[in-house]
Image (tube, rainbow, N blue to C red):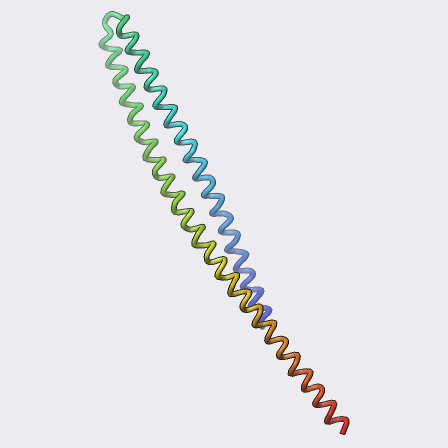
Length: 149
């Protein structure tokens, strides 16, 4: 009886450990996506600034440059919108990462608790088995003593 309970607890513990490993992988993927998004956002800002500066320089040298200035303003506005969306996605990724870290911490606590319970049940089972063996040995000795009379 005690061994079955201990095995069932070990099986449940193994399943929880597999889930924790999966969550750790999800957390790592979220961190990598976050890093990639930060790099892309930085690159987009640099490109928009370079394009705006290039158009400014061209506007100085070109007659009828007002259209180019307007185009540069539109390009800058688009880059700003893209950067804003990237920032929103980055924040959402940070939130997912925080939630995953919380779940991993909670599952780690559950694993520790289950491990402690399993160790306690195992000790109780071993202790119960020892007591049963001692009682059986006592009964056998008593039977032998009675037969010896």
